[in-house]
Length: 198
Length: 198
Length: 198
Ligand SMILES: [K+]
Ligand SMILES: [K+]
Ligand SMILES: [K+]
Image 1: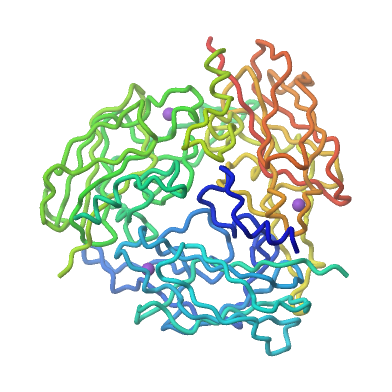
Image 2: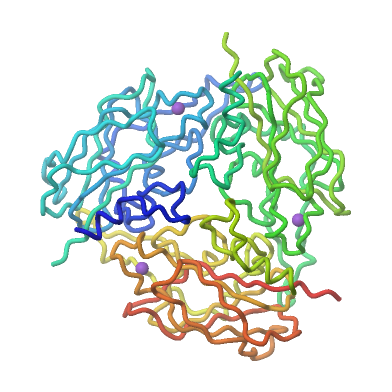
């Protein structure tokens, strides 16, 4: 427990300078680590740039990003390199790399200063996180959180009253965004916790 | 305007430590953001490594990097991960992600300390930047600049006397390099400014 | 020589803060720079995640990483994004980008704090480095080193008594790991030195 607190507090050393704490702990939603998106239970992907965008009269089709983008751990967040869904409400379901007791989740969005408009209105605002022990159950609400429009790009949220229940699947349910009327964009979502010891 | 000055000056905070200012503003030449290379108006790609390179007697073909490499925003600059053109003069034409008033451009090259030779003689030296409102016109010279061989890898240049004209296309015209006789290499080019408010 | 010492010591400046010294020198094992893996002389790839991993009853096949992963210079080390070989002993043979006098080598492994288990038992422990002037010879032992389980993720090793011999091929021979019984994982291997002047 002590150890945990230390890992999630800023040590103040030079090497940690400017790096979010979420980068210094394990992320059980990472695809390279064995996690995966359960696509059948996610919202439909919204095509941000359609054929309406034309270049010298020719319609342009952009490949849209799949929900896998959200758990692939890109080292920098590039504008548009995110998974978009229509409107303000959407769902992402992830099969974790290991069964864990969940203690924190992290949501990343493009920094405001890198946004072409200076705003991040397509960022999620209120969202819920659910845990599932297996694929048949409904899911237990672990917490309701708000991504701060004016906060750091990488925001970590502590699960209130974390239980000893071991989860294998996590659902992220976005309830609102910061003002974009067409779509909401997810850049990265991470799940932190403790591996179950059997 | 005030805001602008702040965004382009070093705030001195810990998180900004060691990061170039160009990383803290929007880049309207980024492919993920909707920008694209107008290939028909670019110089021809030069194949740096040809079949002359052999390994145990077998000729080796390396895939060469396309001009798209220059606007894909890779988080680290890897030696050879650049777009090369023959000789010292070459042209890259980019359709911006948004119509903007251009205030700055940035040129990145591999750091000298990461170069196998300790030199960066394939880096651009003198170059011009042109703005175009649409695809039919000739282009207006926005400025002539020099990439400093001994400067930081990421160098940002202020457009002198920026006008209120809104540009959709930018041309980078390299005039000379730092000594390489065969080819010149572009690692990254960025365009900064203000989105046009209609 | 003096210059060399400076390049391999911490300058203490803000920009270098938290970055390993190996990032500030050339790496002659980098694929983008022209190096390549000689696959016929490497150990066989071990498939970390097999069809034994199932999701809702369906067997899952993960693509396994090839030895090329080790020399592709990814900016962040992601858990599982490594080349694995069976057991604790394995061999990686690299054709360098340039013929060089070898002065240092660097081994990178996933940071402990990013590991799901908090351990890095699949990390190499003792290893040997061999140099070859061409592809027919046996190889000269350049040094025997130990990757420190509790050290920094990026560890650089000085070749003792470096000679003036120019090598074109380097062999990394792992002799033991930090406790994993099934496989050993290599995240990145780098070779530093001086280009031969003919
Ligand atoms: K946005
Ligand atoms: K170069
Ligand atoms: K490991």
